[in-house]
Length: 481
Image (cartoon, rainbow, N blue to C red; front, side, top):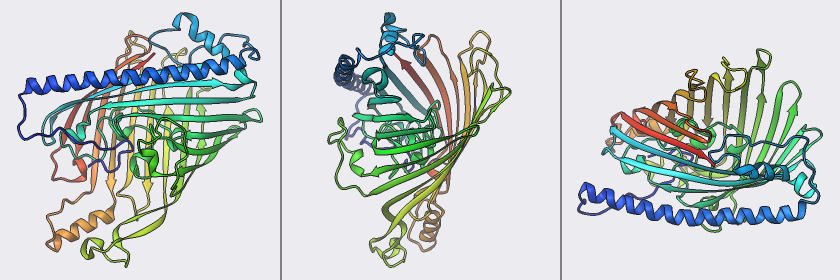
């Protein structure tokens, strides 16, 4: 079902009247995967060479004007390939920072679903951050360009799990190459005001949350997971802008405006920052953030509350144009213009085990989002959990995470399903809430590589008791080159 998945686009499963033997099926899948990865490799190579060409052109214009910093800048995170023999530091000094990341997720359901199956899906992202002050003397400005490629299969669909949220969050929105970020960012008045404009997702700036977990309930910007039919999370980007104003000693306040158009989900001109015709409205988010620190700055926190309003229109979930139940009359649905919702995203570090590593220790989080009851099939989601880094003294960069959450189907839809069954129009599955738990352990064997086995348990999958509860064994790997 996956009605609320922000990345939850669907593809058709394998068909055929006669199922081949298991070994043959595995061989076919393996050969398909090899062909896909070969094709993907060629595409990613083209993207890399394009980015390098862009950077080279900008460097040619800006190298004469760039002034070296007093100390060489260092990469913001560890890399599997290290400093590229000093070349990465050289690029940073000139104002160029490359990001090349590979994420893979394996899922297997030994319990639940229509059948037990193992699937694999992945994402390659290639990006570059260009410091325009160093490159072309444009003060306090940067340009971000990011392409992503997704491939693989979806366990929710292939194994018939019928969940509201994906069990492999990196799947979806079309298994293809896309332009995911293409924006300029400017800072004014000693960082009092930060302006970002171009192609990006609302979730890049609003209700921001990491994707440490593999289940989509606990990954990414929650509004897009709840109402993914009109709020598009990564890897989809849309034209828009946001303005952030710092509040000294408190945090910040920010507001944005994003173009709404279903063509951003399509495949036409997906590699270029084009403006599509036929926009349906504007998405207007707002966020207030309190960013306290405790214990003399050792324990940072982040407390964000926000809301959004869209000028677009969608069909009412249950009513027709005359205000009657569309399921009974068969008349066209009523149009509702003005879509809205709100959210909170709280994170707090409560212990710190190392003075040198600010991430070592225990962090708690709470995310919640609610959407309007007229148009949203899933109208409420809440998730809470913990992350602990430095589980053993001998493994200071390993971590453990646990989360529990629920996604709720709109009560109007639930009431309609109960009514249909009472009137003898069923049987119709009655959907209420889906409950999810996930536990993972992260192994960090070398810088730039994370291996994260996980266990997921989904109760009332698809928000209906007619579906058997599900266990999923997962493996998430992240490589930063």
